Amino acid sequence: MPTGVPPGSVAVVGAVPVTTTSFRHWLPIILHRPALAGLGRRRHRFAAGQTVAFLVKAQWLQQEANKEGVNESALGRLVEQRTDGAHPPSGMTRADVTLQARLDIIAEALRERHRSATAATQAEAAAYYARHRSQFRSPAVRDTLMVVTHARSDALAAKAALARGERWANLARRFSQDSSALAGGAYAVVEGLQPPTLWRAASAARRHELVGPIEAPQVGGPPAPTYYLFEVVAVHRSVQQPLREVASQLRTTLTEQAAERAFAAFTSAYERRWRSRTLCAPGYLVPACRNARGGLARRPSGRVAHGRDPETGPSSVDPQRNTFG
Image 1 (cartoon, rainbow, N blue to C red):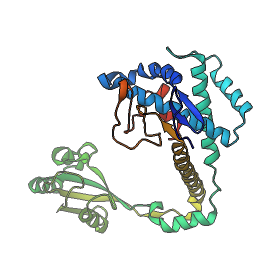
Image 2 (cartoon, helix red, strand yellow):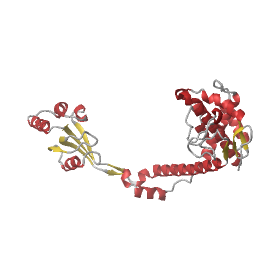
Image 3 (cartoon, rainbow, N blue to C red):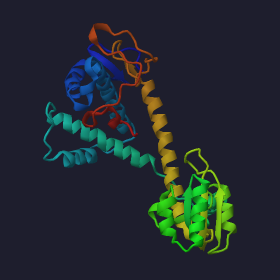
């Protein structure tokens, strides 16, 4: 556990210093990324915070890889494959590109290693199904021809026109203030989706029976009264998918969720562990530092002194690439 930052360094992770030389090398690379262009006078300070965080988290990853025994020869081979023929972006060296590839591959390897989870069993799938049966039920539906209007007088006029033999499509275009106006009057009343008053009326209606106008609030619509005049033309009953049809997908989903929980637990422990081993020099404090306490620390001689998280920035040199988020 470090007790102080060595001279000539901006931080130390475990026993490995993050040198001022590396900070000065990476700062202009991050500083000149387009994503920082709109920050004005805050640009330099923000970029400095990103640079410290990038270098600190690069050490986290590399030291974690060493701790977990990631195969160095295999890692080197993968880095070479990934960077073969790559042209460094402006301001970056071949070594910079190699470092980023190395960090990305380590992060991918650790993610794969710590996302492992035992496959969910049939019993676990059945238990989930029993607790969440409603998720596997399709709602009942009544297909209708309908006029939806906010004026009762318009609904009554449409009803009278139907009695004279006019077609639903014409009436919907003339009177409806809903999507049915564009669909020839077609309107699906879905259990649990439309207002309860409308669903009860539609589910109780016989096919081709003219119903309404009934008043019911329009879900998510304006507060004005809404009137429905409709005829049910088809009935679709609620259907419960049996366990046998969904068990395989359920097991896959539950296994994936378990893997994500395992990885989240690893990530949380990883960040706590390496933050506790990271000490930053005054003027170079970022949230990844053990001695960052929140708020903004005093900023000597133009250096960055962040207690807030400055780590959102350009994707090509992004401190977040060196975590598992």
